[in-house]
Image (cartoon, rainbow over all chains, first blue to last red; front, side, top):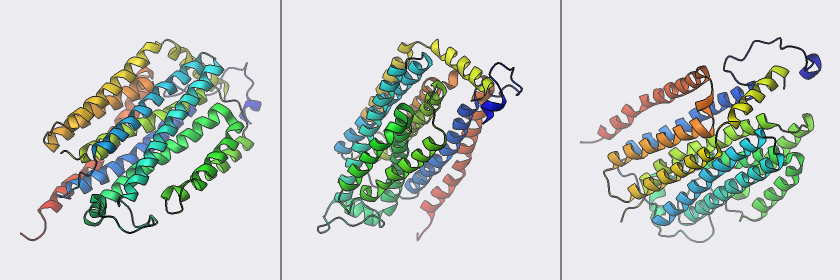
Length: 265
Length: 111
């Protein structure tokens, strides 16, 4: 629309940017700042609950800590591959850009899969929320059952914080998929949705949570239909900002939620 | 994008081309090492407050490295750096107003 009103060879009629960069990037920074406050509020709520609860549990065995450490390594590596994708895009190397973006997505999916597996294990052991469907079989005598009953804030803050972060990582993978593969990613996304929906038992929160992927596929289809385009280096850089942000947030969730709740024998 | 936006994007891309690839690997390595230190400290039976202080200190360093290098904030103009980071830090710091209440709850109840 606006491209038609201002030919490229004409000098710019707009004031230079106050922040010395392009609007898309400033827009993403503003979004990330607002999202930081969302995560900040959740982390403060977690800290509040922890301070005001003297018998705060520390139930995470070394297995959970190792799992969370591998997840952290996945995210940190994904940040490296993302920054290499941005670099490839500025060099005009489309093939390398796509490959690095796909590597970033692979690391992100690895993170989500490990996290999902851990959630399922904790839920099976009795750490649950009232909104989660009850798994089949009787109640186990696990330590986590006791935690859910005596300090319900633990499960609420744990699932709230890590669930919100997992949602961000999942949407980040979708975002990168669209930037890397554009409309070709939509059928892949639908396959992911079907696999997540049909591959999880009905009592798993992921059985219903998988519909986020369907919603994302619909929204992305509308966006690509309304504005089909080849994403350039600025789009890759802006997507990278979002991706690094989810990595950044995890740098606080990991020590606060996992390491500070590790069971020291 | 508008032509002036394209020009800015090209300039930003040109600036980023000068950052060595090796730098990103160093930052990645440093982040992994700090994560390993955090996990190691977890099992050192430290006092919780002391451990929290060290863990948060390391997390802030990691956050600064990610924002500064991976998100390129270090290479933005100073107006962008200061306005975004200062406003964010102030807003997050303001949320600390709730912590005194969390400590007050501990002192409540039957004596």
